[in-house]
Image 1: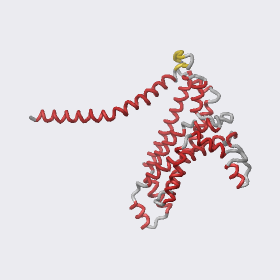
Image 2: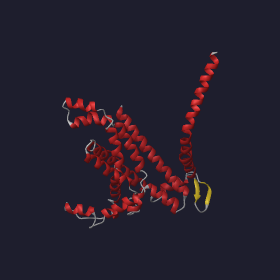
Image 3: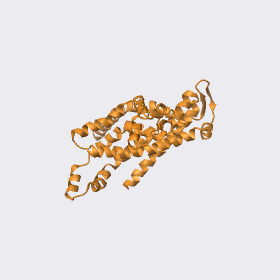
Image 4: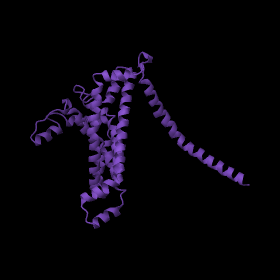
Length: 299
C-alpha cells in the first residue's frame, strides 16, 4: 500500500511544479521574445554586412569592429559616455542619499519636498531639455542670472567643448534624482529604530551614527543604486541629441547617438550593431565591477 501513496504524492508534487511553471511561463515568453532573441540577433548582425536598403551582403567577420576602431568619431563617443557615467553616477548616489537623509521624517514639508524632487522624473525628455535650453540661454537664462550674482560673466555651455557634457549631466541629475532618492528613503525606513535609540543612549554623534549604523545598513541599496545608474547613464541619448546634437565638434556625442545615426541615418545596420555590442560590453563590465567592489567592501 506504500507504493501508491508515494506515487500519489509524487503526482501531486509534479502537478504543483507544472502549475508553478504556468505562472512563470508568461514571463519566460516575454524574456525570450523581447530580450534574448533581439540580443542574439544583434550579436549575429554585428558580424554581417547589412544595409537597410541593399539588404544582407554576407558575413564580414570582425571587420565591423575593426572599422569602429578606425572610425574618427566612435572612440570619442566612448570617451564621452564613460566620462558622463563617471560624472553622473557618483552624483546620483551622493545627492540621492543626501536628499533621502534630509527628508526622512514625517513632517509635512518633507512630504512636499519629496514630491517636488520626484516630480521632475515623470517629465518627458523633450520637456526637460526645453526647460534647460531656456535655463542655459546666455545673458537671459537662469544660469546667466546666477553667474551675474557671483560676479561672473555668462556663457553658453551648450556651445562649449569643455562644458557641453557637464551641462547635460546637470540636466540629467536634475531630471531623475527622484529615483535614487526614493530607493534610499525606502532603505532608510527599513532600519530598526532601536539601533538609533541605542546610539542616542550612548551619546553617539550624528556622524558616528551615520558611519556606524546608517551606511552599513543600506550598503546593499547603495550598490543597487550605483548599478542601476551605471546601466541607465551608459544609455545617454535624448538629452544629448536635443540639447547639443552631439556637438560642439562631437564633444558631447554618446555611443547611443552614434548607433542611432549609423543605423537609421547611414543605414549601416551591421556597423551599428557592432557599436551596440561594444556598448553592451562596457555596461556589463562597469556593472560587474561595481558589484565586485560592493561585495569586497562587505568582506
